[in-house]
Length: 343
View 1 (tube, rainbow, N blue to C red):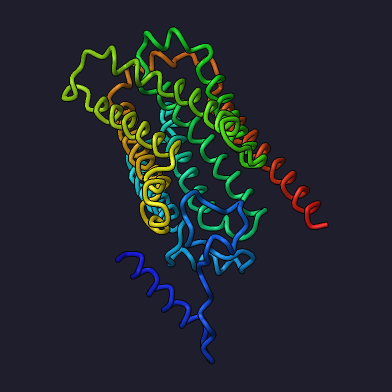
View 2 (cartoon, rainbow, N blue to C red):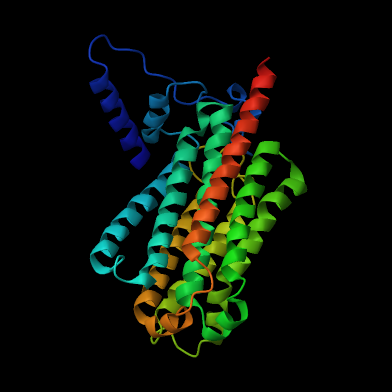
């Protein structure tokens, strides 16, 4: 229903843009046989967008039915919701005067970045083979940024003193390295089109290691905290974010439910769409949890971070810069390979 309304809106915009003799409507989707295998999705046989159209064509597909539309909108709407959340923070959090507020700003920024980069990737990747690679490399950069942002707020606001004493010397440098490694593994797997187990190891093992470290302060706190959900409401949101992430990971690593209904999930019902929904729920629950921790646990984190062992903002910039550089280098390798293929 919503997608049909969006299509009518797109047709209305088209009629307003093209005053004069009416031009034939462009073909927005084609079958799988009409696009290169690089763009194929398992068990999805239709709903692909043709390559080598104008940029405005792909932006117009934001309001069309195709097999990436739900992936675009799930993260786009969440990104817009985060902008509203940031507007609330600007009014209630003293980012300039409170030195302990910077991690909260970073998690909102990185959450918005990964959601925006993901929406752009799913919306514009059909432009060409080069842009398919490049936009998904950008998507992986956003994931790396979010991984470090998550590690930072968990270490800063959610951690218990006992776990902090065990990991303070290595936690953030290791989180920064694993975030970059996750980005590199995903980019390399995409670049090499490595099939089967080896490709999944390159992509998923760094992500598993990064998540295991990043979430460890939360898991430790859930296990040892003597407080009930009434006394510590952030705990409920932390538990929710763990459950939502595990569900998201399950749908990301499997091709369900479309493998059960091949040819029936061109627009709705793809596992990657379900992954997007659970990841958004995870992010929203996480943001609510660390906001409550920022407000309620100040005596704890002020004492823990009085003498800061690492420049976390420097590590954040290093993670972002190295991830962008990795994505850029691999995009240039893609350009060279495609140029050689056309000679």
